[in-house]
Image (cartoon, rainbow, N blue to C red; front, top):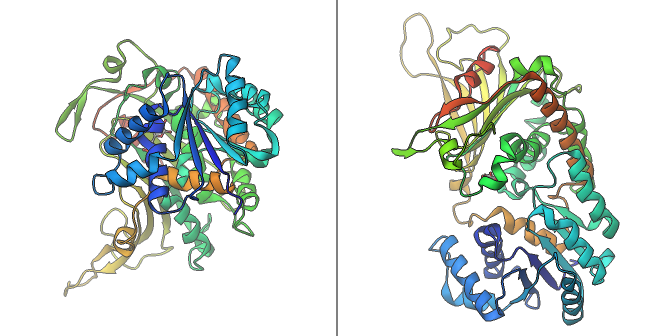
Length: 484
Ligand code: BG6
């Protein structure tokens, strides 16, 4: 492989780094997936020396890794790879520090930006000034990549001026999740699903990302963002693209991303006159989750707000395969439980000779659950044993590919382990290409124009519920129930 010899982490003391990035690198180190010579350099504004920073990393590992996986000696050995460089990207002197770093750590380098996006442009200027750009450098960018097509283009243009597209690694951490990748295996390593995977057999698709957490101290970011741009623009549209895309001809970065981008470009814009019927936004009020009181969004925030913490919508893909098949998407904070799943609802049998019994009688569902458990379940109709008089009673039974059981011996990884390793190795298959981001934003921008013009407001929903009642009505109008 084409491994880099140094990984430079901007935002090294930040929340994402502490919760995800250092624990992921520890996991890779633990499993001997990092070259012994790979150096990790953390940089942030805090004036720390390397020893103090290493202690901070050890603390973060202790706090965020599962206790059974954390090992003090391994952690201490791991942090020996890490150096720290205090730096303020807004200060031109940062370029000199980076120049010195480039001399001290010769060889290929990967730079990971997990700072505020407002710092991206300046940081890139400093990197360029220090000679850390072009072919010898890979650049990874953490979200959010702008708040609109225009602002994301500004970032993308700044990056493109310094790096070729093949060296730019835009992160959507959902692509690092195991079941998301397993979706590719399910669809393209099995012959039985693909012939059914279209408008002839599939009634609709549901994609849910439900969270129980609320603001989590991210008020500044979240209140200016909302569920549409925080979750739909990136994670949900990526999941949708993977479910809906045509089979790629090969398992390489461009082949797969070519197919995804076609879906993103085929999303039907939601016009203003469709907003009322096809979209619901909500904001949580006080409620109870798992026996615990949860405050309202407004009181967590400390002031009034029109930001949506929930969104449900009906989306169509205008191509041959999916003509007439609705994709129902919903995501929200402070919902009833943490659950990420994709439900493929197949059509009913054309004619049933059995009495219908139960909601999904004589139709099948494939449930791909991503969180909290990784599972794939196919619901089939079966006869209930017994000697029923005059008819036959049916009930759905589950054919499960319980990943938890089938692969019990395999450690569950953090999504960022996959992504960091791919960055180090230079494999961009699971990163988002520029034309994908653009298609995502183009569709979201148009939707936001429709939303603003329609004047709809977030409807209240109790924390611990499944969102405003209108979200149920949205699918109910089409004879559909969410898989709550
Ligand atoms: C992030 C969002 O991108 O994804 C957060 O900014 C959200 O608001 C998170 O909580 C969800 O990720 P996961 O992996 O916990 O489902």
